[in-house]
Length: 139
Picture (tube, rainbow, N blue to C red):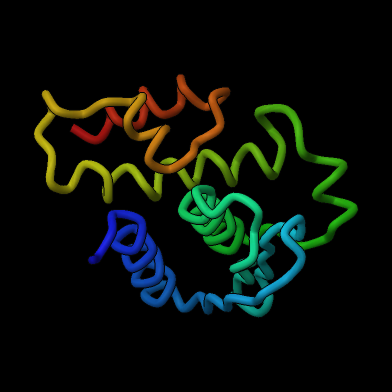
């Protein structure tokens, strides 16, 4: 049976391919996060991640890093994690923007639900205002 998650992964894989971004899946430690590299236009996802429900948002987030040309330096990552101007916040914003068209493609305006969107894609709750804004902007 084909699941919603598989469909969303196909959507993101197609998006990445159209933007010349390579996605690689590796079986790593369950606590090793995914990563991306702008220079090589690639994303590495951890197929052994401890919470598979996060795959969709993680992949959209990493694709967003590549699209925005973010450097993949682990020190930079830790130094810039918080705040609306941080690289990580902007990648999360990019992930939401990337997923909104997918979520909305077969829905009418009345059936759009921010809570459902956040639950489906395991979006961090602090992005609730962003999700609401982007869903409204879609229509």
